Image 1 (cartoon, rainbow, N blue to C red):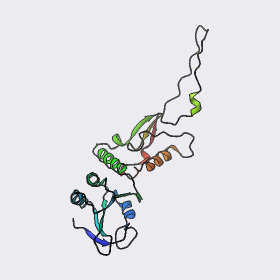
Image 2 (image 1 turned 120 degrees about the horizontal axis):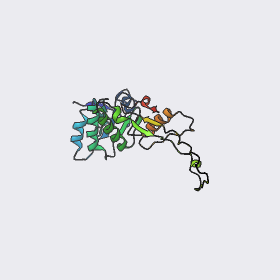
Image 3 (image 1 turned 30 degrees about the horizontal axis):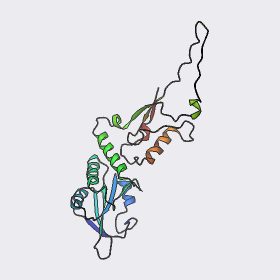
Image 4 (image 1 turned 180 degrees about the horizontal axis):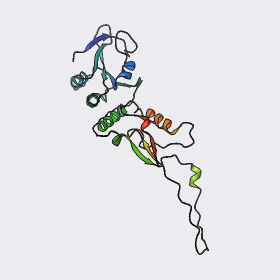
Length: 221
């Protein structure tokens, strides 16, 4: 792909002369920005980046000696695979920035996790089989419920009283394997269970996955 060239100061966002990385990331799966490096893999990375749906070369100085590249990967499995391939070359470079859903994703491991998880789910005949995690009674425990010790009770009755049946265990479907593996719901939280789950996926920076749908949360008796 032939690179489109524009002249913009860093961080080359918000100008009519070129692409706005934040705005572009609202339309794309992932936006990646990096500048030229001395890495032996730079040309290879550039070749992979050029296969993205959007690829623009940005001149950073009036002398046109320094350039950066803004890459927008589309919301398809193929583009996600290309983005992950690019990460194999550029993840440790200091000049790299990642954008998704209009915000910066500061950790490349988070980016890689979502890209990989999305591709795995898309390879399944039913994406829910991968995305949804079933959990039994996934709630934060009240510390008071653990008590302060133990007690032994001896009954002299010929037939001891029947014990109280254990409380019913709730089974819940959590809608994001990448972000909710260790998450527990707070019963007394002002937000609803579904809202707590959505907030946790956002905190874990996984909500930009095309398959994430908070409405896949459900309760099973």
